Length: 419
Image (tube, rainbow, N blue to C red; front, side, top):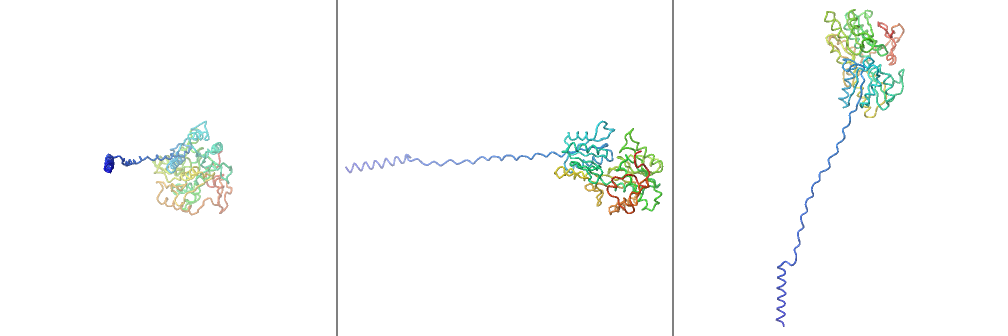
């Protein structure tokens, strides 16, 4: 019995060894390695939309390249494009002769249709049209150059929230022009080529006379020996069949002893006539107007140019339209006396011309320094052309008295009003 049990035990142990060798207990599998996640690209950043440039429109009374008033405005528009990234659209020759049957306010509507958010009317004879347009388009900003509609102290004030008047105090520039003319003349006879007759043109012609009178007398000349004559042509530039020809007016001055002619019109045609007569042996000179480079028309006879620099004030106005700080204003901006020829700060400048003698140029510079120091030539005693009192002795003219000058001054030859 014991022998049989022993055999059974030995058989069981052998069976267990066989089963163990055959792998009866499964091995635990190693888990598969987890694959690294595939990197997902971040979504591309959304590009900010490109801002549309601010579009402004410009209505020019004359050609954009007239070497005078309209070109000064056009180049101010280029200045705004450079400084603000704005976009200018313009129409030139906006006057009854070149665009018969249309009005400036109608033409301004065309600029708005092309995207203009602000429109500049650049001539005094567009004043009524600018008012009508501003009232009809309250969402469009309007600049009227040389008007006085929104001047609280003016004669025609009315509240027009989207309109601003901007003008330069060219009275100072004209005083400088008169000074240069008085220092240059050898005959004592100065001609003034005037456009149409209104408050603006009277006060500018009178300013030139005051500057000439001051520098003539300061140089030690007899006050009674100075002649100053104004001839009006009827508009800002020549319109055949409508105005007197400014070339003929200039020629008439030069051939009757007026050896210096000051331009008060929109282009320097007087310089061409001075150049011709000088070439023929009659020394003749001229003062240009409006545009900083106007002397380039005939530098050898040009003694100087008072000019408008519209860029700085237009920049302020359009910037305020862009940022929402716009307010209706009357702006009558003078020179920056720290530097009257600074293109970024001075609305009125003066350039001595190549024909101005060195000593005379120094005298003009000294006169400008006196103006900067407070010299005011609109100080009495001054009479009007008809002999009536304008300013009592020591009385200083108010802005209103200068702006609305009703007559030329005593000592000036020429019409004070249209006949």
